[in-house]
Length: 201
Image 1 (cartoon, rainbow, N blue to C red):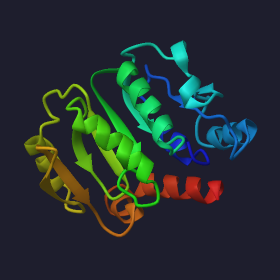
Image 2: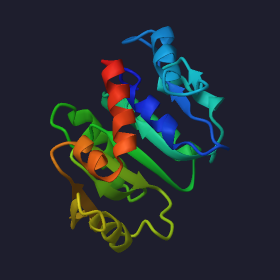
Image 3: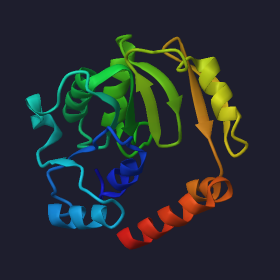
Image 4: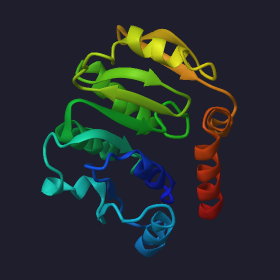
């Protein structure tokens, strides 16, 4: 978690029967600051685990998550540990998102994720400018052709298939800012997110 922004945004995507889990040692911001920020936009707090992600252990049940967003420590060993945790807790068809995967600032992140893909276990699905979306157990709807059609159906996004370790992956990109796409397609949501980001500084 970086400043609480991703967690606050993900909170909008939970179904009624779901609970957001946030793992952070709170070294960049305090837990109190995070919780105050989160409660500006949500009626209740997520489950907060104040530990390093490498120390999660049995805190998370096997196969209990449909979505895991990884943006923790950026050294190779830490990312490999986060990958192992994500694989354990994701349900079949669950999606893992790696932040800062294709960026030159964090080569250890790229190396750790590429090693998992090279083993043949991790199946890359969509690559954006700053994130990789992948799964260990592809289900219908996650095939390259289906994903490509979904992305291309949005007139604000462009996409093409590329090859990575012999697998087809969808490379997707959009307009200069996410705000533009949201503003033109969902102005109410855009206004809400804009207020959130301004409040977060």
